[in-house]
Length: 381
Length: 78
Image 1 (cartoon, rainbow over the protein chains, first blue to last red):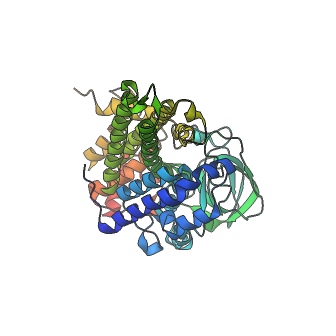
Image 2 (cartoon, rainbow over the protein chains, first blue to last red):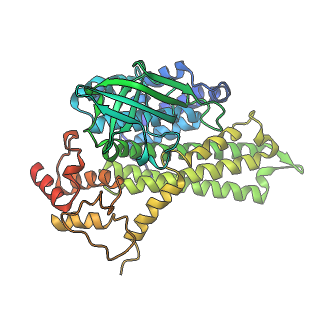
Image 3 (cartoon, rainbow over the protein chains, first blue to last red):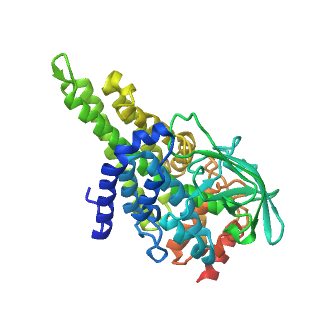
């Protein structure tokens, strides 16, 4: 399938692939073990424009279209999953929501520094007692007129450990609203969440807000519309970003399993000649092609503003996440005992792939949405 | 216009029964006919189908919560 991209976007993606290969990949294991994504890599990603990849050029971004952005995410994911997660939270979840739902003044104030990476933003929706049940969040705000006061506890907030700014969804008695909260506001507490299976270099932290007062101008979107429009816009973009991340991760796992099977010998033969190893490779290739096709289809529908892009994105994310995990598991299987050692990347791929089936909507939530679509779209007389 | 708007809502009902009915004044979100994610899809549909531009100042469920409200909103943007 030929992907139509103009020269400018093609060069950006080729550059990202090289950056992933030569800069990100050699440091990915160390980042995972140290539990930190290095500041210099954040800066390099900002300087290269990746942190503003989809932001319009008039605001300092690269202005990539959805298909080009997806290909960029997949390329970055192959180098280091953590780098790709940074794009998802900072750009897809936070910046895109501000671009769509913010006022012109808010866009001019925040978007250029988000595009350059001078300001890093994290997205604060999930809470200790509310993950899939996002509509039930308890983080609360009071309307003080010129200001708002926020109190609450967010958890599992990716890159909040180093973010300068948070897009927080909170509620009052009636509805939810979205607010930008600067990290250095009085009452903001950020605590790392160590001991995680995946995302160890993603600075995943909890955010506790103790009577945090912010000016009214920090309200994003209209009061009471924080979930319907701001959060849903963010999650739609985030889902698309994760879908492509799954493609990148599946490809990385496939590369690893094929490379290993061409070198490793057992019973005097390279294991790549064994039929049951080839079965795993065949299934992994097929799944990767299918996942990428679904992501391209979602990207094209997003590019054309097709309303079906929401369900296309949901389907792509669900399939891609499952593909990434199954492929990573097969990669570990092909590596045998070596697959359990961190001297090979596949153990990290498997851990990171599992989380794709949980974040931006669990696979079960995606299945509920997709089944409703199926029940409405098919089986008509 | 009414037919197209009713059709997009019917295509996205979250109720399993085929014979569910809703009036042009029913609050489709509050009464559980559609989920909140439909709001995002509806915006894309309205922009593409009726060639209008929806700005951030328009992002209020009050503009989109019933068939009649949606029609009024689209007509106001033309």
